[in-house]
Length: 125
Picture 1: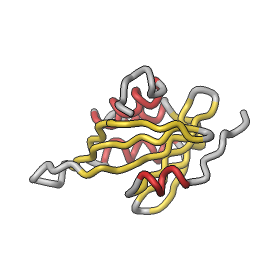
Picture 2: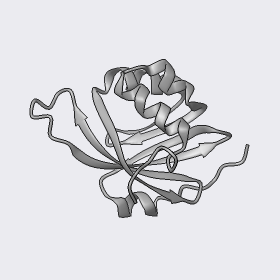
Picture 3: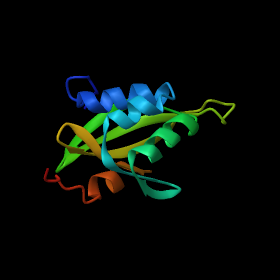
Picture 4: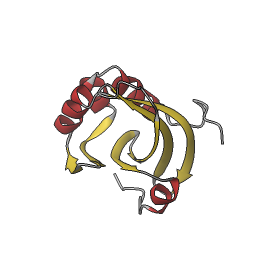
């Protein structure tokens, strides 16, 4: 599926724009107070974690494709890092859990199969 803004929840679009602009406050505002963030360096939670990560990760994430999964969305993204002089994109897959119109969790994976298999479940309010 080709990504269009109509197939990607608007809060996830806002989050991507904020992360790409290193705008931690806006990235965190798109999330629940207890947002869970997990990637190659482990798992943390809370908006303060999101603020620090968005401001310091030095990453740009360009969404390509999205896939509905129970409880959220998996997004295929071309990732580049400020620290990579070659600026060569690496495809990463993130699951976005959603609750009450906000992002409740973000988990990063190396493959689509891993991301789709992650037990992301719709959370109650």
